[in-house]
Amino acid sequence: MNLPSENLALAADVYNRYPGEVVTFFLRFTVPEELDMTLQFAMPEVMEVESYELPDGIPLSLPRVAQVDQDLVVLIPLKEHFTAGQTYDIVARVRINTFYFNQYLITEARLVGDDGSVHAAESIQVAIHGKGKYLRYLPELYEGDDFTSRFLMLFEGFWKPVAQQIDQMDHYFDPDMTPPEFLPWLASWIGMPIEPSLPSERMRAMLKQAIMLFQCRGTAHALKTYLEIYTDGKVEIEEQRADNFVIGERGKLGENIALGTNNQPDFLRVRLQATQKEIERSGYSSAMYQRKMKEIIGAMIPAHTRFEVNGVFDAQDA
Image 1 (tube, rainbow, N blue to C red):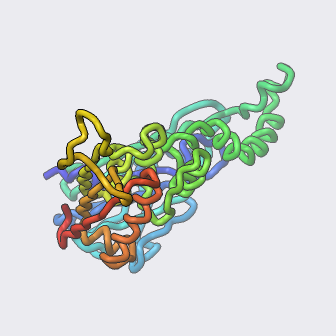
Image 2: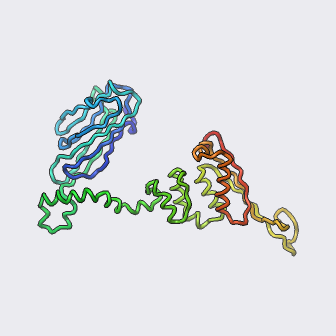
Image 3: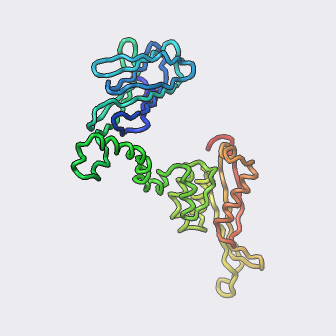
């Protein structure tokens, strides 16, 4: 029986390193029903495990290291200290002890049965740079100077996070890519008020619709789109319009004719259907949530337009 891929995952904190630096690996796995298994973490012998972070209750003496061909394999038996069906996280910090030339080092995590069958496997590769990239800014005579290369690596390691942020600056202006904490800041650039309490996926959806919402501001289409994103529910809007009474051929009172000093020819009826889960997320009562919707609608429609809101809050998800 092969385990689903989500039952074993392997990731690293960085995927580019220089010789002598440390890489932190993160392993997450779900223990299969067959407890006669071993978690194996294989790496080239030029890598050295410096420390582990094991789940609570797992002794640090449990992992052992074996050499297989040109690989080092960390072996963690699952039979005694792990529970079938439970998910565990393990962190391993590994130092790169290799030569100063460009190469790729491949690590692999496996769930292996006692009979040698592999039930799940995940691998990643880390690029090792043998020379500091800043050497290209120096005269050619320094190209073969090992001390200068390693000296510049210190500065490059310090500035690398800043350089990566600069290289990825365009992602901060992309609603799909920007970090969640930047979403309200990005919305402020275009004058779109967004409540920080909204889930990040709704903030992203609003920002992606920003051009349409501004171009169609005051229309039923823009209002419906905004409310559906805000509530993650269903919205129906009914527009009622009336013609002014004018003496002439069309001067007949009827259904579409408005007459009187309190004439309000434009009227919206908004029917909102949201889930009880959405009410709980907002922290409002049903009445407070409906008042909140009235505030939003009142700010988005023309001042002369009247409206009413009918909220339906289902006990189950829509």
